[in-house]
Amino acid sequence: MRKRILVLSIILGLFYSCSQSNADAHRNENRGAALGTSYNIISITANEIDFQKDIDSVFMAINHSLSTYIPESDISRINKGDSTVVVDKMFEDVFALSKSIHAATEGYFDPTVGTLVNAWGFGPEQQITLDSLKVDSLLNYVGLDKVSINSEKQVIKTNRNIYLDFNAIAKGYAIDRIAVMLNKKGVKNYLIEVGGELVAKGRNIISDKSWVVGIDDPQMQTDRTTKILIHLNDRALASSGNYRKFRIDESTGKKYVHTINPKTGFTQLSNTLAVTILADDCATADAYATAFMAMDLHEAFKLINENKNLEAYIIYLDENGDTQEYLTKGFKDLVVN
Image (cartoon, rainbow, N blue to C red; front, side):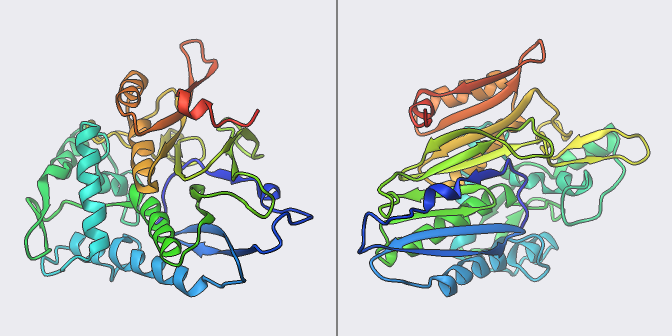
């Protein structure tokens, strides 16, 4: 379940403290690989606790329900035309949130774009040769309004060839589920990072500091350089960018970026380099970051200003090709000076 994102650098040095200011607190860390990427989860508790089995259980449940890279998953079976699949609560949650954000973004966030993701060579299925006529025909299978869940919790599609792909929201949702698990266990201070997307709660009480994360400079193609540092407390953060995830056609040498405009069916090569979104939950941040990469800048700015639950940091090129930054006031207030 590989999500195409702008990867964030966690500033690990800020998580450690040579002298613990809180002797009663213990720092737990779980690292590993899941959902096609790496994860790093830090929790602070009174005593040492190993949450690994609980974390593995969340990832396994997410994969079983939502991974297009696992042939036996519920979503893979649905995409193959199996109408008998009864979806679980995770699938229902992600579907409902996708419907809401699809409407809010006027279709720029659309999980049915999976057919085009595969066709352009960015998904688990076979890439095909595309021209404008073929893209137009594939657009018949795009549109979340063509999909619903009935009272029996079965997915209904107006066309069996519609291909669902929740990879632009599922990783954020997985982080949210891990946060729910930690909350239920009474953990009040933690930082969850999966593939550069994060949820932070409380603070690093060991070093008596807020959680601090760094956002990569999108114009550094090889060496990773931190663009800015921000405080992250009781919020979720997700990013998307085209600068590292692209495909080059071997015959023409043309570069295709991973963001696909669900309205045109073509890859979206725009002057937006990267988008970082803060929201109350990571699934929401994840989805909006993807949608804003597919939008024109003026559309993204308009929607951000209308949605008071989002904060944003956008790096883009102006008409002269110069790099510019747009930060909402709420985002700007979190920048480490």
